[in-house]
Length: 454
Image (cartoon, rainbow, N blue to C red; front, side, top):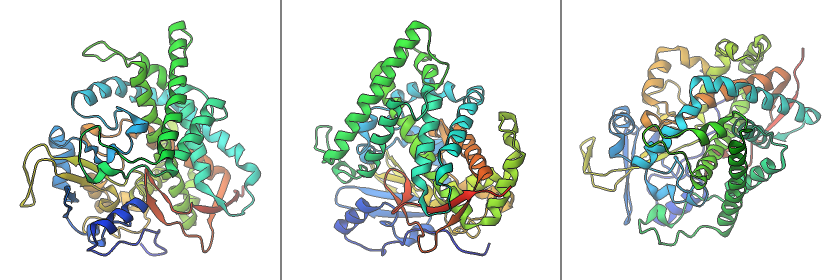
């Protein structure tokens, strides 16, 4: 594949001090890592406080995520940074608590429920098409603001049956945007393990926005419980999850538990979708030939659930955007017993890092890994690499419960936007990927867009 390569952050030198690493990590997780991770099967990082091992070996990844997931629970070093917002949500828990939560949540995302949610996705996309029409004048615009608004609209329509224009929805959206900007991932617990009472040194803005979001979400959840009790609740994702009993205990989520889950649904469903959609639009602007193929497919699409199978090119474009810019760039697990990885001993409590960012660009796995090539998914290398080294939604028992939803959402919204608008890059404004909560652009993604010619 020839042509202009999509941007990726410059890697740090192989050796830096712990203090320098903490500074780089605070600013951006991706550029804090050395270039060798794009070719290594395994790399160790040692500090006085913990040992961390990044693994790109597909066999080790399967071991950790698929074969023995209970032996490698999620590490709380990174999770502690999200706890003020997410509490004990399914994203952070382990063991029996996590299993119980998944038993209640998973039925809401089964195939039939996705069909029910499809028209809400289409309605959100149609709303975005109308909303951005007045500004479709080919002047440079920051596209992440548009995709964030759109992704939030999808979440509120599918979860609570309200559009983003609803006052409560708008307040949650504004607070989440402030929370993202406060960069809450790095905290003292990320480097020094300690008891629950140990200070985490969160920024005051992080604590304040988390409290505001939790208050708003709790009110939405309380209001929905009242509608359920009155028998007038809409049949959406929130109602389904709040009324589904654990098949083993017969218990449903309590109000605080449901508030935890709503917080992660919004974070996972909004932040990750907004990131993926923005990068997909940028990649299509960078490659007009693929953009025209997506637009041609959209012209034949009926915007009915049954017609999704006809959006093959659009699906491959979205998969390629997720490969190059996985919204969640790294996942951290922890050993619970001594292990041996590639002849290296790992002690109990060692951090095991799985990095979709590096795995998806690994130059010993993928052909032309840094290039945008949706056609790769039809090649033997693409098919094999997809099985061995493609983790945009994780894998195994902890695979994202909304993975199917996210794929339908991304493909549908791309088709709607490309049917009506044509996107172009802005010279001299190449986006620089950075990662805090999700992979975003340091100064935003700036594109031009105007009405697509008939």
